[in-house]
Structures are given as C-alpha cells and as structure tokens.
View 1 (cartoon, rainbow, N blue to C red):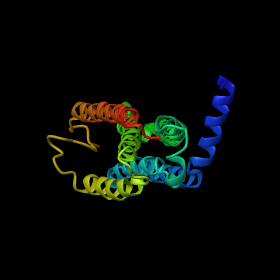
View 2 (tube, rainbow, N blue to C red):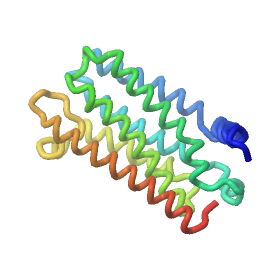
View 3 (cartoon, rainbow, N blue to C red):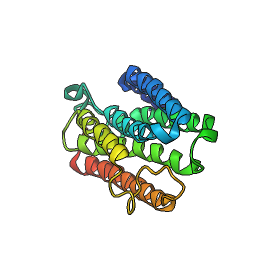
View 4 (cartoon, rainbow, N blue to C red):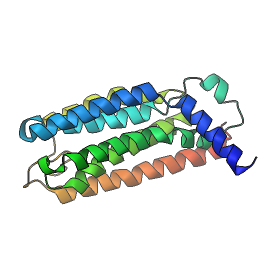
Length: 207
C-alpha cells in the first residue's frame, strides 16, 4: 500500500470513528466554563478543575470502540486505530490552549502550568482508555469518564492535600512548582501507559 493510500485510509477511519458531536459539545462547554472562570476567578476557580476533568473524561471516551465485535477482527491493529483517534485529544487540547491564551490576562500568572494541566489530563485519559482496550474492554472510556469527571470536581472543590499536593492551585502562595512536578510526572506516566498498551497489543496479537 502506497503512503498516500495509507494516509487516506487513516483519515477515512478517523472521520468515521471520532465522536465529532461529543467533541464539539465538549469544546463549547469547556470554552464557556473557562470564560466564567476568567470573569470571576476567585469565586469560580473550581470550574477550572472541573473542565480539566471533562477533558480527561471525553478524551478517554473518544477511545471507545463501539463496533469492536467487527473491527477487532479486521487487519487494522490497535495502534493504527489509536492513531486514527488522536484528533479527538488534539482538538480538545487545542481548544484548551487557545482559550487560555485568549483570557490569559484574567488568570493566575502561571499560564504554562494551566496549559500543562489540561493537556496532560487529555493525554492521560486517552492513554488509560487505550490500555483498557488491550484488555479486551471495547468501551472503557465511558466508565473512566464517569469516574474522573466527578473526581476532578470533588478535588477542585475540597482541595485535599493542597499543602503537599496542590493539584489545582490558584493563589500566589500555593506551590506552583510542585504542581508542575505533579502534572509532569502524570504526563510521563501517561506516555508509559500508552507505550505499554502498544507493546501489549503487539505481544498478544490483538487486532
């Protein structure tokens, strides 16, 4: 198969497999929530953490294979189908970054950390769902979303361990450096999980 044909096949599968309606709705909701946060940051900051959870959950959901009984026996390996589904995570990340850049003057002076949080959350959700797919679970993303979204809201509201593990900081006195470390480590773990998922798929001969 020529490279051009391979790219067209990948693009065709991506258009069919990506839940565009869900992504569009999520993008609109995420932008709305971030605009509310930017308008009243001191009061509405928990919505920032909630939006991070939303990105992680929907990114995981986009990895679900609703026709697994058919596609799991086709010649396309899981890594190929995973690659075809990455536009979902890329789109959510792009919306997150663009919105933060647009309202950066009304947010805490740690734009890099804020961008890192949403980006890592989206990648981590997608990686976790992909790992579960290698276990034979065709639609793990929905369950992951049902867990991570309320968990993010709870952490954003209650801010447990905020002194030692500031997951969603807002105030200048909070340890933003430690937050960067937390999310950087999470990013590394997400990459390891994705790598392990691909290796597991190859080793077990999943298709």
